[in-house]
Length: 506
Image (cartoon, rainbow, N blue to C red):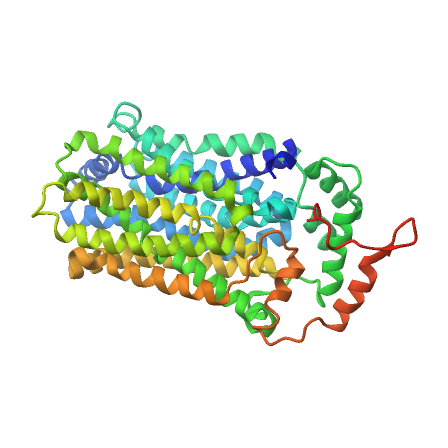
């Protein structure tokens, strides 16, 4: 399938994700290395301002605000994305978003020079807004520009570049590179680079043809965009499929979040996205990062080796995401998601056992560490990227912006909740804390097994129809009957040919 990727489609996927998902991943890991220096800078600034050492609890509070305000920004970004997309389109939104990344990079890297820890906190907030917009606008753009037989693989660029971003943050944070007292500002200056690269490439690539045709009514523009993305002259089939989708939708105006929540025709699609996104954040991957260093110390690794061993987690993550992108069109979305969540449940259970025997058996910590790597690989094999692909696939054009807004809100709220509650759960349950995640992963797998239809290689209309039965909607409606008649064109020999079922269509 990868032979059919044109240079134009690959550039859109790669540079689109570089200025969006990569930055999100990078921001997840970049604050770990310089934490000590940033806290020292907070203390120094406090001394200069108030002439006394900063109280310990104030440092902790400022630091946890610095870390967690990122998710608040993400929530603001996710809530505003459907309005921006309405005004600027998919590509325009991604381009505007680079402005946020550059402003955040300036605030974060100049905060120390300006003796202002407020600049760091505001910079993290703006970076969160950037990520909130990116994680909605990018999957939407990728889903709409890819031919349907490789839509999953192109969609996985989002997840692969998140993992690469996490890895880049770990590598640059090494003490030999930028993880030093004199250089930590540069860790944040680096944020501007992917954004600037995207600004140089994306303007020369087309907007989403579905957006041009269905929302802008720009037939010529959509045809040109299809031709460039697919690398072929005759795109009448693809255009016809988008027209058919437009005819099947009663309302082509963009639906608001409230209308989406009230609409019984998409009820189970919505429940599925909410469950999948909540599991994406609540399945415990974030908690694993908190634990890794502690487990490695227990295993007797020296403190100065920890950053290098932690690199293995970033590397495993990236490999698993790439593998998933290569097999998703063969295996399908549903099996990869269920496999990912179930194997996470298995390895979390094992990890709980190993952690409880950590002190009594000398080689136990090594097993714990292997479990951590296995949990990370399981997450990236499916749950790490597919929720975003599904959000784009389960909804037709007019519902998509509102669906991404709801999915994004669930994503960032769950992320914030884990960050807030996990330290308390950990204190309360100690090594049994991971059993909470075993529960989440198991319930998620069961739900997906029962409800989710497979979406690989299906048109957006086929996918909505596979939900018609569970939504108890009549199927197909008169409009769709009409559209089936319209989409069967007589070919030159006078025989009817079915346009909707061809392989290369979107």
